[in-house]
Length: 81
Image (tube, rainbow, N blue to C red; front, side, top):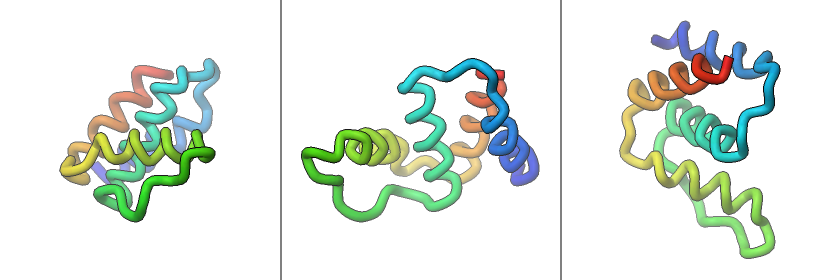
């Protein structure tokens, strides 16, 4: 699983068509959940829109296991290739 995940991370950098913002946020959130676990820290301030979106996307994945997050990340990247 770990090897497939690392390959998906590498593959994500070679996607030729730009994913939607929602897909990018989901990729970010699943990657963070798989590598760091549940979201930590406080939500960014009201003028940090990008930071808030990333924090919120990651927070939606809270409670998901590392393996589940990896599997979903691999599937998402595969669907975008």
